[in-house]
Length: 290
Image 1 (spheres, rainbow, N blue to C red):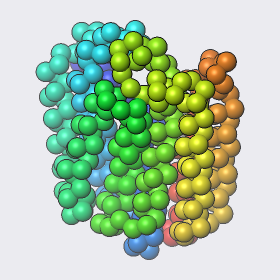
Image 2: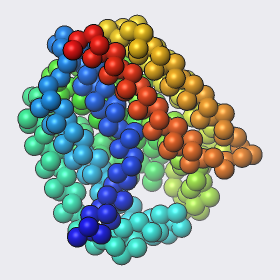
Image 3: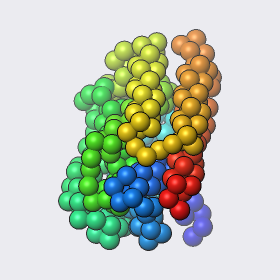
Image 4: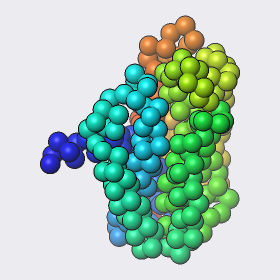
């Protein structure tokens, strides 16, 4: 049983929760303080956690089902659960359905607007896995999809979406799209061979790194805008400065001639960034409103 659980956790890349979870909670904190003038309740945090787990699990389950043939051909992904025979397709389908149920349940417990936005979330979760079959903008679609989690945290506690929420959403969308471009470089040759679409395939290695840098400059600008437009103070400013340094270092260690530190740039730098920004935001708001 524990082995099976481990296979499911590997399938949904549980370690990648470090990207999404901190920002989902940051959305809840920032939204609640900005709109309600108080911190979110522990019950709200619990339901947000369930919603995020359900959404991420459903997204990965769908991706593994939809991409199972492609994954089997790609040496990098051939050991994933379905192509490696560790899980049957029907098992992943059941897992995905249960994950959607968790998402729906949590949304109904959180806010009416969260429920109304469920069809949008489901559509984005489904369509993303198909985008690399027809557009190099697949990274942007991923960014817009995964950043629904932070936006969802905001909506969950405020039942509203304002300008600051949209800035927060787009900031994280460009952040995700930027590091996904870097991640996709690993599959550049395979994607070309299979006729799949991505920014590395369309624009090449050098230009892809430039586009990723531009996206992350937009991310840094978005963090600055949040500082000036919300109740955040100098604690957040320190975290924002560290995050900008992390983004700079992420691109500093990569070059078209040396991609040996790609995994460090993709996982270590970006998981560190999300934790840092959330931690300093939480300290900032707890100090002000606790």
